[in-house]
Length: 572
Image (tube, rainbow, N blue to C red):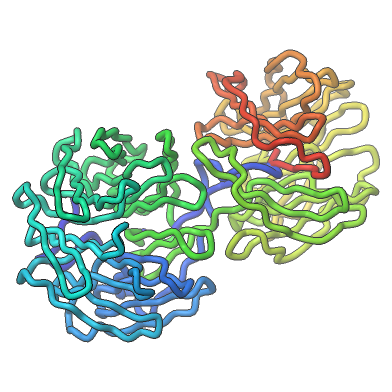
């Protein structure tokens, strides 16, 4: 476990997460996510913790320059010096009074800063108490941990009240309000999770893994508290009654630090080893590398813009993780919008945002990252068969940044999927002719929109139609999922040097009347692409796939009720 250096420096890297959903998908648990990094005034600023303020900006503590920073969602920076020199500002929280509050570890004070940047400081009664974490409680007061004094403090009208923790030398680190009206905190040295009522009554719960150094803590969307274990390389979950479950992280020595509930219904956390982590309430974990090497991601908050913001302690930057749209939809009048998905299985529509008004003659057919900026782009087809692309970006990943034509009219050919067959980092365009012949146009160029070559994959397949392309068997080559008119589903596994050689054909399921596959993407984060289907009445559902070859149907879930006037396009 990385320790404070002489009580001064704790711990001493930016990220991207891939999406593979067509019209109604969710970020997959591998690859990259769109991340934007905002440099501070000095690379040595050591931004530590971060919170969303009442003014719609994010606020953070800066250790080295002894400042409080403020960053707008568009990246405008302001910094305010803390009056007490070498105060070592640590935890930060939004207060009940419309101000931001922070703990001063070395100065032994609690600070308050107004949205205008005016700072007031309040001394903690116990000398050299080491105030560390701070949070707003359900009782309307601010609560904080005193790591060195082994106490929990409460800031209320008239002063500060302190409560001694029953376990001695427990090293309380972070604190968060629970759904039960109590405050919950981590005891790094005591290997316990503590709970304190608003009246000061304690309860402590032993973490199963000894010496795991429980660290960050937050309330989850499931009514439980979630926490990180710095030394045990685990994420923990405790019920309000103190029943603890632990989840081991895939990467060793990841050093999980801060954890927050994300806008997608999952938990997100920083890993000082250089990644951002995500865990569903059912325990599925994904880890995503941060762009800047050795950045030391530490603090994290759910931002005012629906994204996640984090600090990079070692690079002097603030990072923003954009949760991109998972599906694109078109209304009967031609208007286009996007769905943002979330939930433990990735199948819950959470937000809809419009992209454009009516589009005469154009229809969205896929959602895929063509230009490698980690934001999915919309592929559209014109009535004459021409193909175009909207390159998306912006804070929500739903801003049309540029447009491009992929090809002129494709007489007889229909685009049926986009996937990187030849492994060059650019998705390739999979086409099917009216007689069932399958082919691929390999794409490349600076924006990934330049046709490079054309290769036929198969002879005519009659009535079989390709409905998506994704790597089902995990061999690194995308495979083709096909559907017969009676609803029967099958997969052709591909391989070879260019990824266009059919290797074998396997039936996935018998006839499924009324349902048509419209997307292929890993919704639940288990590493297997899942089938998104649309019923005749407009209902949308998902069939979760798994098994040794990734083609075994495991379960079905309804994603949305009838949407008769909308046409969806999912990554496929």
